[in-house]
Image (cartoon, rainbow over all chains, first blue to last red):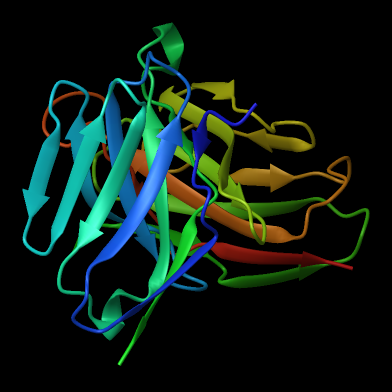
Length: 115
Length: 115
């Protein structure tokens, strides 16, 4: 049972345009959502996060939107740069008991930004 | 400077041998985690520990064992009972409370190949 879903395995955009990466979740107990960026053969690096009590969080070129009623979040990158090419993972944190600190990850979306 | 180290970067073993992957952090984080990544898959949680001398099974703990004798160290042993041990293994850590407690910080990973 996949609780965090990234339905697009890959996305290709032109440099300077907007990249939109999507993520859906099924568990209404998730209270915090995070996006990680990962290059091949490296560990993921934290990008941006959002609390479930908010609907938007912005950090420079990166904005995350949360639609709680639809259980959907998206990451917008504007403008996209070739260096943004990587796999992006959506992750969610639950609040149930001993699993407070566990993150559940989606399968990732490979973003390719073409010069 | 602070961070998480995993060694070695690449590891090769014969089938039937146990192998231990190292993970050390100097971030003074209480919680540590082990994940496994396979092609086309997200990060799947193997084990996690929130305090020294205590750890819990994640979603795919079978065939793995861990120890947490020191706050800084969380080694993972891949035993011969793990049916598909070839994968990219990632270690992470996080604070349990305070700023940034929702974010996990990842090491560079160890690529294990078992033949």
